[in-house]
Length: 619
Image (cartoon, rainbow, N blue to C red; front, side, top):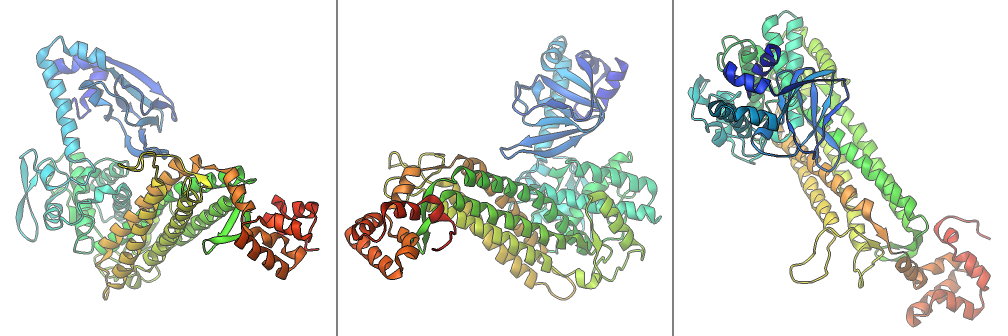
């Protein structure tokens, strides 16, 4: 029981409780061991209680309909599902053991039954749980994270900077410079925390820098270790709600860099046994930012962010490509009319149309992968303008080596750091490729809306999945809402590309101060495009069906099929038949038979699926 109590005491939700209160919880604990890879609980299942991680690491993943995505990694002393003590609920995420783990399962009913024996203990325990959950909500990664939440407790600590002293929320990991940015830049309402990939990228840069400075003997080993651990917690998904700076800000990203420095410094202070704000023991600038400048940290983090976010976009596009290939195979025998300039052209199969969509999606995937390699070149060690002032001469090579280890990416140091510091050309090129993908995706959605138009008075060749009623006044109307929303996302991406272009052009001399809006535009494009592709795949493409008879009827009544017999009857006769069919409405096949230019058997061969949809020898 003492061992269990010791583990519980390390948990935030149980810290500060008396031994008697803790014993009521400990009596409900059941020890469990599991090997790496074990599914510990699944999203959507009823919560039976909370799980305390005593040893090992557990990854929490959430599936929003597009496959599981990592949220946070829990380690010793962390708890999953503590809200179950307050109300019956289901798991909002899944948990998987990353390593062999030792767990303490706390059954909700047993814990509450034990607490019911002592009203004072029940109030103490449940109040602590509620307080911890409240604090997490205050600093949750939402657009509202900022000044209002930060001051919710009313307790503050005094910090100072160049401008002067300021009261900072006592429970915030960020400090005075972050809070000034919150006050100064209420611009988009979108904090850095809205993009977890950027928070993780910043932490990786800081972790690599701390390791490099420790290797070079420039940073006290104990401080370096604390900074390293704080960075790893952020990489694992913790403390993201303490990054409230608006994505669009003045200062070339200095506020975001200082936000990272302050959060890491304050968390490192806690790991060293000090209070938040006691910067004499670990300083945001002197220790966390050692050998760095916003002007090499911010663009490097932005490059990493783009690579990380691209992974999700590529996975979404690959799923789309597979779905399109599947439809291409499914519709391989559905004959239909191809069209140019919205006029009847020549026959094809619906499968060929969808296979073409799959191929063009695959091309975009390849171009995105190729262009993203530009982001592997970084300017770390250049500091302010690329000259490396305030950095050890050995530092650039060492920090890049450490970054390679931290990220697992083939990162290289730019050949000329003065050139690399203001250069945003890679973002212009990559954004253009993202725009290309969005444009082609939008064109595909235009086609889907046309092909499904009707259902009685339009093309009516396709049936898109019915997602919602289409009108508040017209009964029975169903709109192509999924292609429509993808179109709108594409328009936004196209606009963001222009913003990125202008931001890159606006750089002056040795720095581009417009990188924050560039970062916001690019991250927004990638996030919304990823979501749009996922929605298009799961809510539209996989559910599309073909109106085979409608497609065939349009082919048979089209004058375009005369092209199929042109090699046999000649261009002049084919033109004569096409004109007469258009004027009289008599099918092309019937007119040719009437004129005796071909036999029924010859027409059957000419109008066969194979003959009309692929090359064939001309006799």
